[in-house]
Length: 188
Image 1 (cartoon, rainbow, N blue to C red):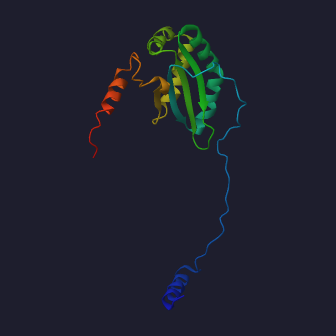
Image 2: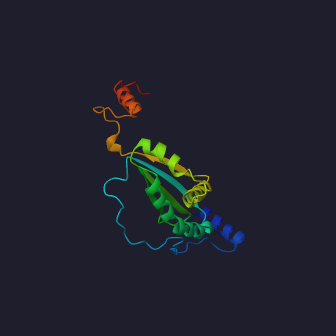
Image 3: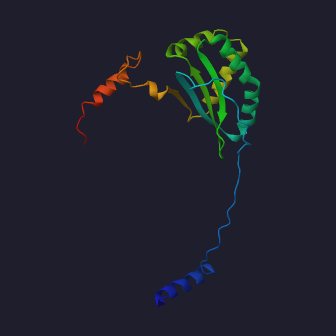
């Protein structure tokens, strides 16, 4: 240690009362809000989720979690049964919670047999505003709306999209994109 370094260290001790030190890190593992893993369940259908999948993604603060889980226990069967009975081509796949620490993060998944089913099924399903189904979906959507970072995504099986050999109804923009990719514009 140089004389200058020693003088700086002595000044630190005079000003702060003790030389700096390094302590061993004591790690701590916290589970926060990681629930017990549920037993595996068989999917309600074989194959892919559907031709169109809609996913509502949202988080809830921990103080709302128990209320939301109570709501799901009471309402998910009502939603699933009503969708199956009244919404031809639509399927309620459930609401799932991410198994991780931190805020409770959820995904509600709906699947549809076609774009037509997506467009028409809600018109039929939500006709009766006093029905338990209408009230349950409205409340589920209200939980989704609580999160300012919420997301609604719409998905289709990628293998069925952008196939230049097929004339796929509703995929004209995909075909245009494939044609445009052949133009090979200059890159910066």
